[in-house]
Figure 1 (tube, rainbow, N blue to C red):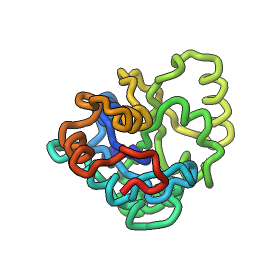
Figure 2 (figure 1 turned 30 degrees about the vertical axis):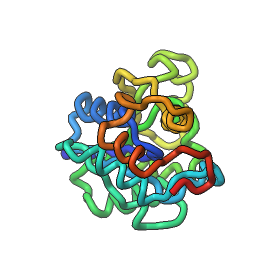
Figure 3 (figure 1 turned 90 degrees about the vertical axis):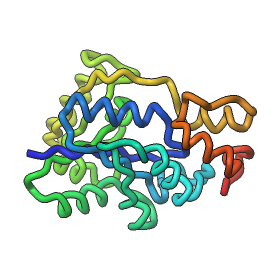
Figure 4 (figure 1 turned 60 degrees about the vertical axis):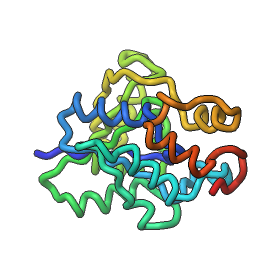
Length: 209
């Protein structure tokens, strides 16, 4: 059975930590490819001044231009409005069919909260959750208790991954740009060039471009 990975997020901007997560899951789980999918409107980040979807998508395309198995997917942007993962899983399930296993890639912090998302039962039923351990160990009582809850409540299929993580965040990168600090090595070279060319993140405004 083909396994397709999905890594969603705001990607404002996409950074090397995101790409490392995608590549780690791809390798460890034998995925055919990973769809990296920027949200259109992230209802969880409403009012925080997220850059236009077209800008975030363009940076993602630049970041993945030389990648064979990582794909910039604009499904949520094309759908418009608030981006709900349950809706995305429904669409992808129809598109790929029953002979494909969708694998949703998250960090362990997200694992502990995603049961509060819209229609979590759709997500857990339609995907295998690939969880990259960042803040917790696999045998952490907090993680094990939550896995037990998700199994009982949703019959969730969760796989914990030991993918090396990079201590990078989009918030950090935006702050470094505002402070006039270098971001080379934190984001792909083409993304760094795009940020400089378009003078992104120089001000912490509600609409950056």
